[in-house]
Length: 127
Image 1 (cartoon, one colour):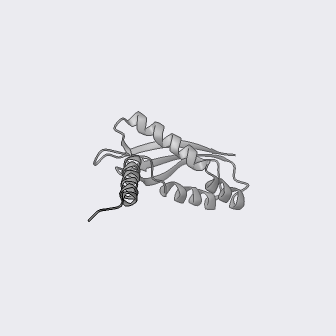
Image 2 (cartoon, one colour):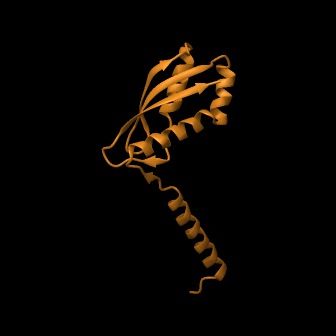
Image 3 (tube, rainbow, N blue to C red):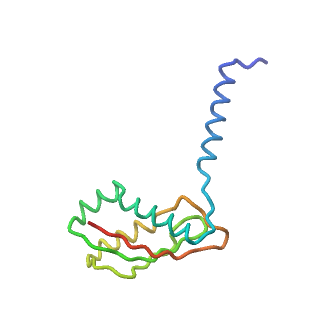
């Protein structure tokens, strides 16, 4: 049975796209604590500057301004495992709960070696 050329091209194109997508989704495994700290800081800063977060903050918590110092626990698969407020001049409990839930839902673009976890201290400014 002969397979038409167009069918072969479509199949090969789909296979190529699947392969490229699979490679694009691989996350780097970080072993250096300083590199983990740097990556967490970069991604948390980006998350709090994201349009979705800012839209909700402006709508529900427009008057909230100040800083928030937190400890974030990061586990092997790049997920946030713990959130602890160390210090803050923000008194709005509802906003602090929203920020906590927001951070706990984050998944970073890296992985850690098996059984490895890090605690990262992060300061976030809200304007």
